[in-house]
Image (cartoon, rainbow, N blue to C red; front, side, top):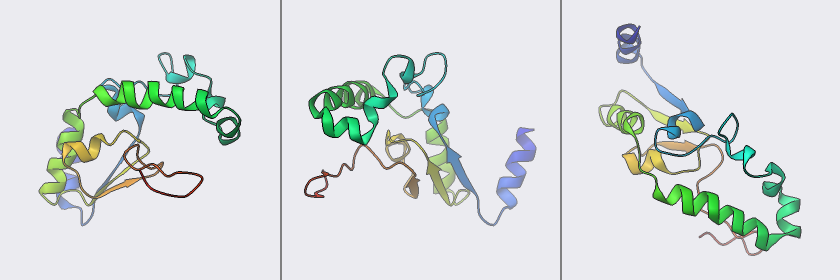
Amino acid sequence: MYAKAAQIIKSAQRCVAFTGAGISVESGIPPFRGENGLWNKYDPSTFDIQYFHRNTRQSWEVIREIFYDLFGRVQPNSAQYALAQMEGKSLLSAVITQNVDNLHFEAGSRRIHEFHGSLKKLVCLGCRAFY
């Protein structure tokens, strides 16, 4: 199976990788859904924009706990490094990811399309400044 996949990738004119939460689990980031998912520990409504506007301080405390305290300690894993190496060898045109953890970039990928944005690029809702 792996040999066939490798042959398809090598002979393709373009190849992209689509990734989601599963690729970062090995790095220590739990998925949002599932048995050990973040939604079992945190109420998903905490991330609703209306909740954020009504409860800004509480929202930022949860955001800090999850995305900075937890995500700030993780490192890229072998799968993310492998994708970066494939890009470096022109076997991969881009990574398209749902993840916001920036681990593809830290692993060395440069052509990354972040479907949900990145925690490394935040926008102020008031003045639209980037942080």
